[in-house]
Length: 80
Image (cartoon, rainbow, N blue to C red; front, side):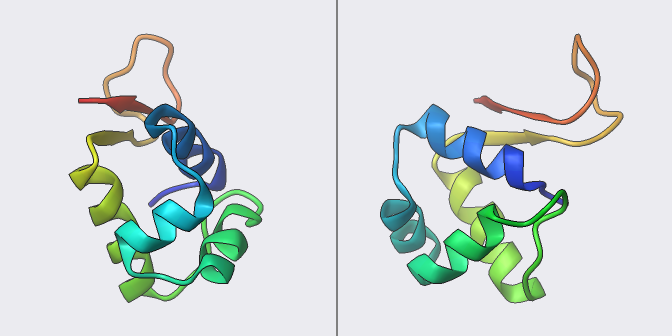
């Protein structure tokens, strides 16, 4: 599961815009915009979410889930 703030933070870490993330994930820019506008957990169909997460991971992003090993706790992102 990915939340909208993780998505925006991942983009910021990578230094890419929504258009670039859309291209990397084979999704449309409006889809990326809708996902980032979600309140909390990113909403979208399973295929789109899988493409998004795969693209971020391929670019070097590690998503930190709730309860995962993190010094401050909570969700987050980091570069591998």
